[in-house]
Image (cartoon, rainbow, N blue to C red):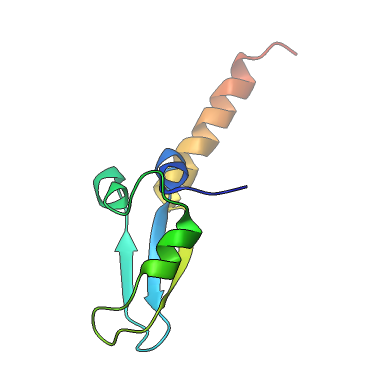
Length: 86
């Protein structure tokens, strides 16, 4: 399965991009910033092309789900369970 930037946007996640050389970290969060990476781009392809603007080394990408996104999902699940008949 290919995970695209649009999948990250849809899941309300953010991408943590860490330089494998100097350890600089940049966070891409929010639809606008993530979309700049290319909505239909595979996350793996984005990782292959990203280079640190400080030292030029390649980057490691980690998908992160912020606490507020998890809290919204938990609230939705609780509400859905309370609406379903037993």
